[in-house]
Image (cartoon, rainbow, N blue to C red; front, top):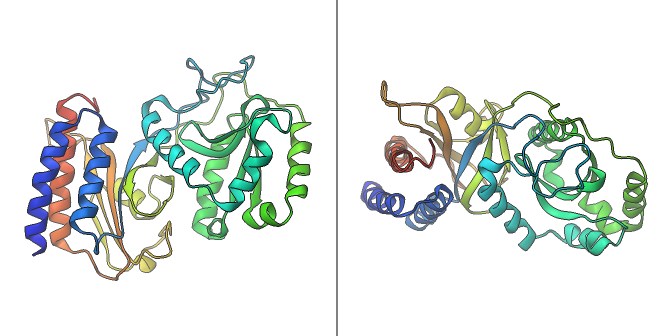
Length: 316
């Protein structure tokens, strides 16, 4: 029965990949088809795309010394993915984010703030570009060791681009908004000191969240970290019967119990497998959901997507 459904899914993927000209559209349609075909088994299904953070942006529309707070600060190569994620969070804010946005919006504090704004490969909860100030509102999962590591990488990336970061917990915003406002006003009173154009950290390749079906997941995963980052590094499919037993597992959702990650390769004329450009990530709420049958068909789907997109020069 599983093979029969996968055969149908493979035919759907071939049709979807051939009929869509935009890579984001292809991945969005395929993730929806996967979830529809396996609604019970696939708790979460989606794609992560390889993105290498640039040095401090010095391209058109990027933040530079002397600029008048330009708003085009997203990485241009993955703008569509960042935009989709940003819109999703704007439409589904937490209670704390709603409360804080009422304070920040419409120049209430004397400066303009943007919410869910892309900077490089990341999305800031709130940012005042003219003051190089980012405000993050953190839920409880940020206290987990693996998430702290991801937050540190994200913060390092933003610090090295001249931004200051204020972090508040949901409880602080909901229970003591006056104190939060005071801290923000204090930071706004300090001078912004952006880095000179061209300075910044070296490249740190990451996986960036692409189209998905399910609850909101981790925005980015570093190379070699978690199941997705490890599958990317080792260039092979990873079937994990119990995520709690996987060394360094990144718990994007507490409901995830088992997982399969399949790398997607750019075609190569010599050996058939070029660079990894993304991964398929699927989670289940049950232990031991995935096996060699899932690996076989998902690798076939990954190959179909890559070849169709590559042949249209989308990824070249």
